[in-house]
Image (cartoon, rainbow, N blue to C red; front, side, top):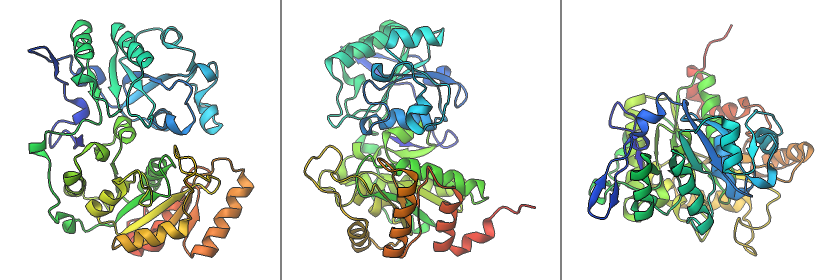
Length: 398
């Protein structure tokens, strides 16, 4: 799914989704009419037994930041009654974790606009129980936000439910028609501002979160920055520009990403473009990073690493790479440079974070920080050290 701002063409998340029931084409209620202004559409997020964990990364991301939806609650019976902010970051946010859909609706007081499936299982498919739950949510009048590889609009049962309940399903990962997909053209050379990709040593390691914090920090410093989303969570959060790259046919991945970066550059005239990474270049199960490096041709890369993670996510027995080996692989594969290392502090206390930051800076010779536990200004300093010409963009404070 390619996302461009409404000024150019309708945002793919705001286009009514066509559902096919037998030989009839059904046009459910427009999500634009439901959503209204950004952040005004209410939603509950389903993340049973996974909130705060790796497979709950979509829910985790929405709790940390959601420009498109007002999140009312999270469904996870294992942590029901707790504050989602406390569970995720030890900071209260008044968004409750509920036992089930009934509990969530009771706490909301009215039917929310959307039911968001907030998990990213490796299968990419709904279980039988989850199918029933999604249909139940639709029966209450909620539209569905689906970030899985399973496109629910293609399922006659869900298509019929859309018609019966006057709701819609947003299949976030569904790519555009092949006739509309773009091949790599080389136009990326026309993007004259620094392009920074946030890559990682594994999947589900915090690349999107770090990219988001970096984008905010640069903008706060007066350096106009646009973030390009490349996965379902960023698009659900409300990324203005992006493409769910793992759902695009491989021949078009680099071209689709290149096209949206060029579009963002032409429309926004930013000082910096930040590209969200996916997977890891060294990971044998995922190829998205190679397409991101090819399509974005980044001038610099920030690498995200989890020092305490010994095995790759969802792949027992597959050892994590070292930052040094990943850096060597990236710089060999693409004409770019690693400008900094960011830490995922899972299973670490604050003292350990400080220790590894110092160790990596000495060992690798590049700046290091933790986007969530250290001041965001450190990320700005990291970028300015690599691209000193940006200093003239800094906001004047006095």
